[in-house]
Length: 229
Image 1 (cartoon, one colour):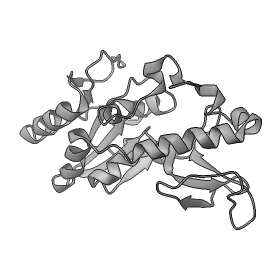
Image 2: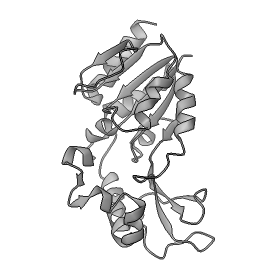
Image 3: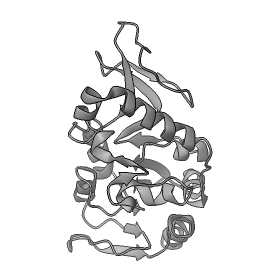
Image 4: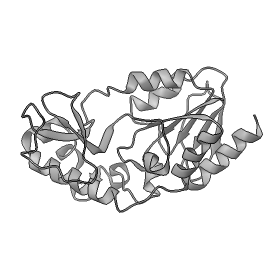
């Protein structure tokens, strides 16, 4: 069974109704991103940061996976599908995907401020100041903030290097280090890019472009892959 590695970004979740700060001029609704998504923000105003992510978490449970998510989950019948996502939502999992690597963290989890390895499932619950881990330290959103390292990037690079087919769905390839994962794909493998917008890709890659939103473009891409197997 061929290994299909898929890098997904905000575009696939936007179709489900999750808004992205990049589409809003650096704002998530009334919030400047650096006031809610940086270590400095947590230091300066942790209550605001908690409120912001509580709102994002609450909104997450009002939306559903779209056909892009669902098609990738169903593709596990034909391929060894590994999803590397820049998204912090759980829509891939809710669609049925079983191998999802989150580069930038997960909204439905919290972690200890004392020990980053202490991670807790919180689902749709609010996270409040005073909620602590077993060590007595405040819990924070399990999110990789601007200026923080991306611990999962080495696992993502390893997956990309093992791909038989590599696909990019709903991302501009402007956000590093995620954008550099394409460089780890083996030379000569089929590479697909699903996005309605123009996305520039290094000329060393022979890319098949599917200029469609994820909900229609992912099923089209999977059909193209099957027809060429």
